[in-house]
Amino acid sequence: MKEVANLADEIVKGKGYVLIPDVLSSSQAEEARSAVLKLAEKEKLDGKVLLDGKRERLYGLVYKGEIFELMVQHPTVIAVVESILGQDMTLGGFSAHIVNPGATNMGVHVDYPYWTMKPPFPPYPVMEIQVIWMVEDFTQENGAPVFAPGSQKLCSPPDLVKFSEISQKLTAKAGSVVISHGLCWHDTSVNSTNKPRVSILANYAPK
Image (cartoon, rainbow, N blue to C red; front, side, top):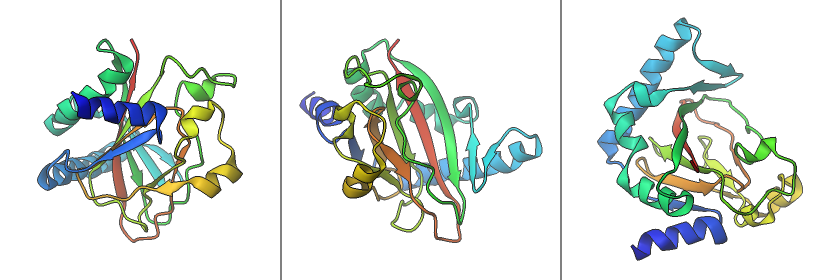
């Protein structure tokens, strides 16, 4: 499909990421967000939530609800990911990231496995694709992700000065997804609202 090929080309050879709106309906997005917040409350009592200051991470979501099963194998996402990684690609992780009020930047980074490797990183084969599911509206104020367009082509760890000069904050409506190259420099932004901001992260790797 030409559209899938164009999206894959943008991820690998263009900006390093694409934003696709309306992948989930608003009701599906709200179902996923509510499920994450309920799970977080329960798992905090069991000591299973990874806490990092104002941030919370929940792992293994694929086993914890039908809405998550739908998301992790959504045909729109899978078509793009398989066109880059191959049809035998595998799921590396599926987790929720809760950015609570007052949370600051996470820190500019590339994704696993690149951050474990010695630079310069290999441009091919692509070793990781990340999908950020926006299960609520991502705004300028609530901690939307920030990406440096084209940085995946540099095959290097982030340069903080360059990142500050070229990075762009990605805002969109609930139900949108960002699909990005693991080498594309990115960060979260500050959540200056009074509500937690929830995203769900899927990581895919070649078999």
